Image (tube, rainbow, N blue to C red; front, side):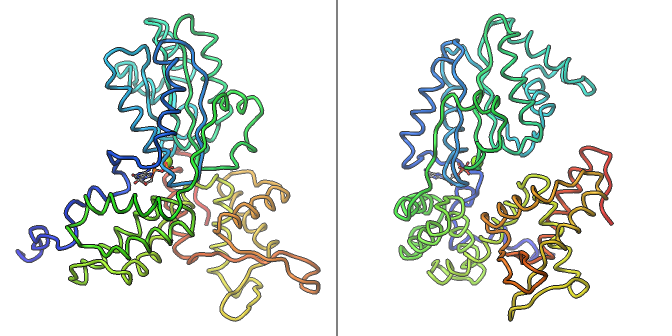
Length: 408
Ligand SMILES: Nc1ncnc2c1ncn2[C@@H]1O[C@H](COP(=O)(O)OP(=O)(O)O)[C@@H](O)[C@H]1O
Ligand SMILES: [Mg+2]
């Protein structure tokens, strides 16, 4: 048995501190983000003085440092000796509805009250009364706010609270990875959320190199990575999306690959290999954060791709494509079996275009002759893996709502 755990005690030749390379680690130094951090602090200043500030909306692609910057500002605020504000960070991937967000506020600040079973009205009133008691400002940071199912209701409730509160108030900080998010909001939520706007641009290759270098110094043993390997990881991530998370993922995965091989140094070759894994993982993360109906469409495509020959596909050498119409039918039947109303085919076409833009599917218009004129679609990732990822996510939701059934 002893050798089973030998690895735990063996010192790594590559890593000196794995934690530093994990996606959850928030580095002391957030490079190239001084301006953004200062802007966030500036926008929060009225709230900290106890004045009703304007709401803030922060957006930019994944991995541009939004969450890290916001959290680092929150830490500084929490350490202020005097402040007329309380600040709460809410990850909307977990708290993804109005009820869950309000419940999270109550359970953080009023744990005695936060027993199960209170309805939304009770919770709302409790929050209002609690803010009124000492007149402080509650700053609610909603990270990945676009995932909230009933977002318009949530924004309405939080904004309206300000007219029900006599002293003190609520300031919202919304954070989103979706750059096109603005177009999807109800005009009322839009004007409430976008009182102050802050954009996080993607990092370029040089910036990513510096970020990686800083992290490599703290996470890897001395000289355990070739400088050329760092630059390659940065260049690959910059080409893809300017995403620091992707760059870090590639670099730490390369570290694991080198370690598995018993090597002492991470090479360019390890980076190339790691890039393949990292992209897959990111695709699965992406799928898990898709809005419900887009995810169901992807699920329908995965199911059809697996069922294969039963459905008509076109083959152009290695890649086979599905007919858009077949996918729509499948999507409708999947939705129905989950007791969800399928969206119209107009919406479906818009979703397909979105999915194409995000690189989850590839599609092209058929020429004349194939069923008149149709779109041909194929999944950009392995269908079996996509299917199981989505099923896991669906099960989680079914568990949470306790009412829906899985499709056959
Ligand atoms: N400017 C930066 N300096 C150092 N590390 C960064 C920087 N920006 C992002 N990172 C790292 O990249 C990863 C993703 O950043 P994150 O803040 O989660 O991005 P976002 O919320 O925009 O998706 C994190 O591990 C973070 O530590
Ligand atoms: Mg984030």
